Length: 486
Image 1 (spheres, rainbow, N blue to C red):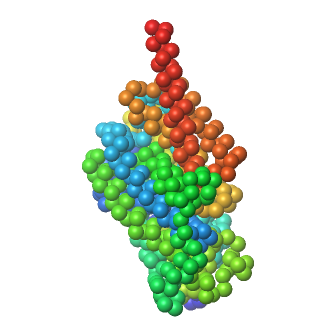
Image 2 (cartoon, rainbow, N blue to C red):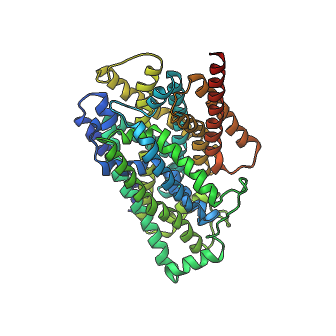
Image 3 (cartoon, rainbow, N blue to C red):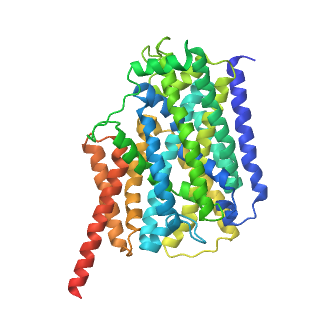
């Protein structure tokens, strides 16, 4: 068997196996929406912690992290400090308010603290952002599959989106959680194999890699306060932290996993587990960029010679040309794992929002055990899967992977975080105030993107802060006017 056939066989076997595992859980469903969407709220906390990690770090991270370091520096790894900060805030500030008996989504919190219209705005904003983000998440691995296993780009896009849609539609949240675990093992194992191979191939090993990277400024870290500087320590910790806070508090993909465990205590433990996994694993992802940079200082640089067009293709190129037959197929499987994990979790969350938040916000009540709702859950999973697939075909226009993912989260999620912050105030906020603040915050962040050179790391912070400040000002003005007229 030649190398291409061996790699393609490994990829096909993996994708078939993961789909079968996900579909097996269809037999265990009790045919209630609670089971389908939240695993009957009895999921294992360790399993949920791994799944939260898988939801936050997609194929865009897998390819984008080493590309970011290769093209710029290892400094981006400090974004993990922002993740730690976001995790602490989520656990101690937001989690007690989001996790309530009978709650299905994050946006019920907005209705409790404001109005049904605000819940609707939150749900629609989430759906828009998730569709765009999943388009990037599917497109990223497809690029690599094209190089690694000779899979045509359209076929790679269709395969990843279709298989994830299939096992999510049949297996529900249980299928999502267990396939997330298996896919995380493949994802981490693949990256570890790559880094260890580079260390072994570079003369002098780890010491040479670190020395080479340091001598070429790969460990440089800017302390500038200028928001126009692309990556600084403050942008990574504060801007990156707010971007992660968007994902851990306003994102139904994460919140749905918190709701799948028995209580708040287990949800907290799941978040700590996620953080404990994320720090070493994501550091490994970024360090692979350091290792690749050192390797190509003593070998022809494919970016300089034109063999690849963008830094995002560096990792697949190395695997295709430097690793033994079979290992490219393993990396292709890892990238498919990252893609399908992101898609499955996103589809499940979007279905939840569509079946619970939107009808409730429009004043329609429903029985969550109805068979018709379960059928609709599966139908909607397929519909959203097709939409994600369509968006993945145009995702190449969004920019580089790390920047595209961060920009989507920041621009679409920043104003949503702003109204979640307003919902924390002691007094309930009027619906018109929330909607006005959300609209104004969205205009502000779009203006910053369009008309300034502000770093993409600050987009989420700009949207959240502008929304919160404008909302607070409107609330205080309304309260003062009411007191004067009384």
